[in-house]
Image 1 (cartoon, helix red, strand yellow):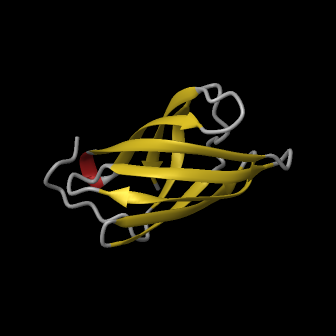
Image 2 (cartoon, helix red, strand yellow; image 1 turned 120 degrees about the vertical axis):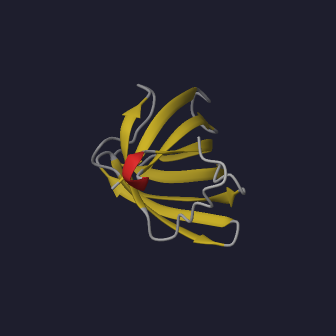
Length: 117
């Protein structure tokens, strides 16, 4: 886990490596992150996602808390919340280990791992 790494997410991109069956993102979904101080946001699209956005905060350990919303290929608006813990791999590549929950639909929970590209 990251702790003193002072991760700056601005300009970083991620793709899903793993996702729960009830999730909608896939390896075709690309997340483009931005950061200013402790505020983070991202745009994402690809696979079953036509367009998505997330916004939240990052703490001093690089952990992220955010809400997200996207429009899927069925033209459904999906909304959720997520807590992400960064893991810095060799060569300073970051994985985000995520626990998320849908805030509409079935309100189910899931996990995913995103990897920096």
